[in-house]
Length: 244
Image (cartoon, rainbow, N blue to C red):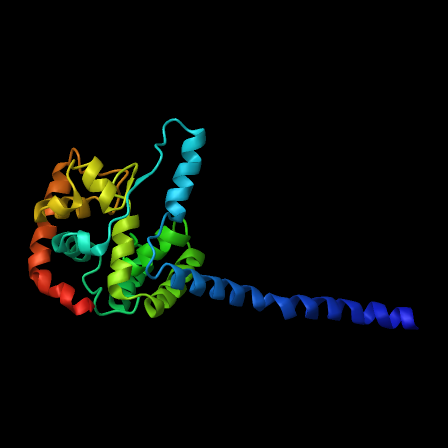
């Protein structure tokens, strides 16, 4: 009788034990994320998931270059470089809290009509993907991206998000961050980047492995011109004051 009772209760206890610990996993991950965000709220971020992945691949593939990355503080980055990525990637950056619902709803409607081409991601979401996630489109990745973006906006200022984004975004096949991009692609220091240079670098952001700032195609040049116009249309350098 005791054996029968034990065998009856054991599976229930087994599952109860698993559920008892299962809810702690996302909590532990959230706490780890918060600690990480607090640590790097001021310290330079040394690398990202994308950079680490490329360096690992480069060890085994001669066709993949090792990452070039130089951290540059936001104070050293010209305002027009800051403005160029906002004009190009996320013109509502100063207004949203990590997720641009207007752009997201438009992207969802396009997806439902079978015309989805991505889009809708904010600078915060792109930074989250660069730092913690992976390439490719999936509901799992997008859900994680949204959740982490919301937490990031709580613990980091807009200026900090922009600073880290400018230091981790990929501008070339090997160059991550505006410091490496300006030195290796345009052969000048960050401080000497002009508005046209900034727009050119921002123009390759959607697909840095496809578009080149060294030998820009007609499409890249046209996109560069659009970004220059958008930089003026959103208010120029005055826009950046809204990030304070």
